[in-house]
Image 1: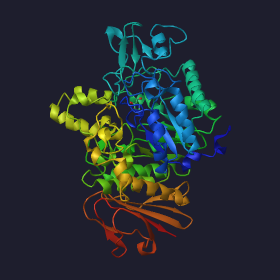
Image 2 (image 1 turned 90 degrees about the horizontal axis):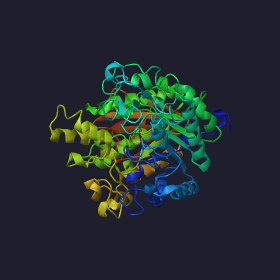
Image 3 (image 1 turned 90 degrees about the vertical axis):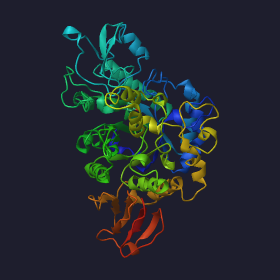
Image 4 (image 1 turned 180 degrees about the horizontal axis):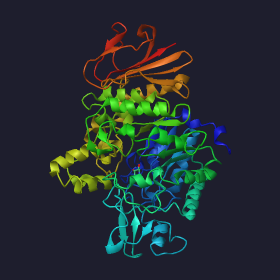
Length: 557
Ligand code: NOJ
């Protein structure tokens, strides 16, 4: 398989469904989602038109960061059904023509991982598996970096009598990737899962793996202080090339999470001539209503959203491949952010249409296809997420009273999108027959899969139609060019894809206001075929007046 250029790059024709296992479907009644539950829903996922699944971590873990704190990379947590249940799901997915990618979390481990337990006792060869430092003079921390979840990035270990670095939770110590033995371990992990038959990896904060020599202080970015010295760091490409020694023996899809990377920098990773990663998950697309993080909110701007899509569509065109997404387990629900809960169905459809027809591999996050909305907690104690809890207690606590803090978290917390999947109007939304591990969003009686399945005009059936449409036209897949026809509008997203004289025009309104849409130059709507729409198909000259959050897709030949 050697040369990546010769591989089929099957992922370019795929649509992925992202499962956050804990909240997807509980098959054994213990209140936690698991692989037995997933098994029973594979046909549902296939019915959406999806032919790939990304699993957030399934490995044994203390669960401090819901599985992103791995205690054993080569097993499946019994909570999720263990290895036998995983193999059954993998086989059943493959039988249905679906690929499966795992989450590779190797920037850090859990502190419960045996490597860490041995490292803190200085047991060879684990002594330098992590980033240990002595205190500076006067007992000061080794540098001024912040962790992204819990205060400072250094934790004192009383046993080893040194600090260890943790860019995330205290119980997520960072691995020392400069150590060749650690890289060897990563290659073993890759090999293990690929031999088992998985089809690739979503690589957690992969751009954080290489820290700048000397771990210098950072003066640029309060709150994420240090990121300038570990994101896109000095040896990252060397490491990724080394991992390819294993990956290139298989036909894989590798998607790296790449916070804050510009398209130009991303090309260093995804340029197909270099072939380090198949694609990256960029984060700008989640910043249309906030500054870098949802905890610093600003009003939603469609122009910002379009600028981000546009930059990535153009920036990688012909050189590298995009991942397309608007939701995952790290962000509150997109319908509550970029859409409108008041215009639930219409805005859910506009959100689907605004990204599914772009060039790249689309990802859907569980519940997005029925327009799940942000969960509203009653009490701060209801929050499970380590990051939210910290923000509630610290950052926000300094300035805000509790009621305001709760509202803030409702808008910003990852937990807003981690409530159990709403399968039906049955108790606990049909997610479990037991007691759910986490609160169910109270709107499940209205918003659920069973109800939308039966309704031809639902968001769910719109996703099905849109994905089927995407597959019908080569123009919407690998080759067609992308043009944003109205970048300055803050109400309408109008883009087209074109190939060999065929064109598809997508019009999405992101407002409840009536706007006059006029077809872009060169398009005569009356001559086009309206393939998908969320209201009626009225025309008014060479355009129409939009209804709230209306969307349409026209085809021209
Ligand atoms: C990114 C993951 O998506 C997120 O859920 C996790 O908390 C951090 N990386 C740390 O692993």
